Image (cartoon, rainbow, N blue to C red; front, top):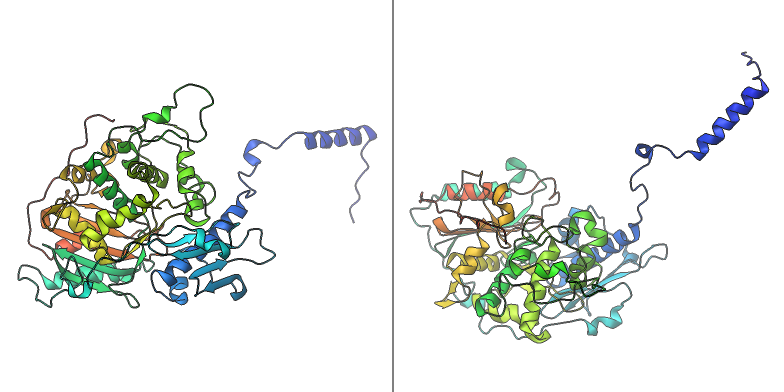
Length: 506
């Protein structure tokens, strides 16, 4: 046994004083945990419940998928197991879904309901199914005719004809295997659900995963941005919008409290479509709690969130990928069209009905504003039609729908990317400058989880790959590698060039 000798009284006093002083001195800064407490947890749970409600609703009533398919694929990305039956209510009569409702939950029940013409709309936390009739809808009748009897590309009738001799069928099938067998060629989390290759206007390859067919609609995610840009371009072509004029609204949030000029008034349509607005990068901070995810999945206005950002860089000088930049362009589109009804009908009347995109459903928020940064449901063939419109220089059936000038803008590197590979244009992605194994004139839409429509003008090709990749941030499906593999099936052609970026930022 060990005995300790008692300390002298003075020593005890000094030791006690030192201990007390230590209690008064804060620990060094490096010892303090950063963001140790998640102040945003209720918002995150609200987005989680709202996302599940919206995806279940769209999966069931827009995509015609089963509950099991939606949980296994659409929601697998979030590693989100099915909630107990008492926390998920599916109302097939109303075509609505409610998630949550457990009395122990810190967030309210979140709901989404199907509305004609716009798919499912996520509701506000304080709304119930009694409010469904107040949600926006779009009631245009469908285009005339049966698409199954209308020849491709205006319809879905495709003749059974052999491949042209110039196309290497084995190489084409190998490219399809590259897309679908990702356990061999990539990562098993990359789940291809459809692949479509169009050459000289004809479908030369079409393959679908089990449980998916030519009619299956899934979410485009950010491929919707390229659709939005197409519609905006049509308004620029008509003279209703101007690419290099300031955005046509002045109600930035918060409003200026004095007579000084708001520097955000210098932001042009070109800036937002080039992802170079200079506004605060909110989605790169915490999308699930302060950014666009609150409008995607929790019922917040897409417009108010987009307007509520301060300028942190000179417009046009810095590239930053922001959903809200696209939504500012969509707000400009709504302003130019002038009325709610004209705005809701515009995508159908100007684009979808014109080129046979009968399966495309553009989503809106509960205020009736299109969520054209992400929420469009469509199938592979409709996206191929969009690609064909660009491949054909904006002309469809002899009628010009989109100017060549707009297509050139879409595929010209944004000035803010010129020193970094020139990888982005006007809401379309471009082949990076250091990529030497594919034609530099190719350009592509791109959406989360692997949604790609790739246009290769020099080879008269459109390639569509749809995916439900469930580790999409860690393992991104390689669209340019797919382009390389598909090109192996076609005769060599001189490569076209990517347009040069403007000499100066705007």
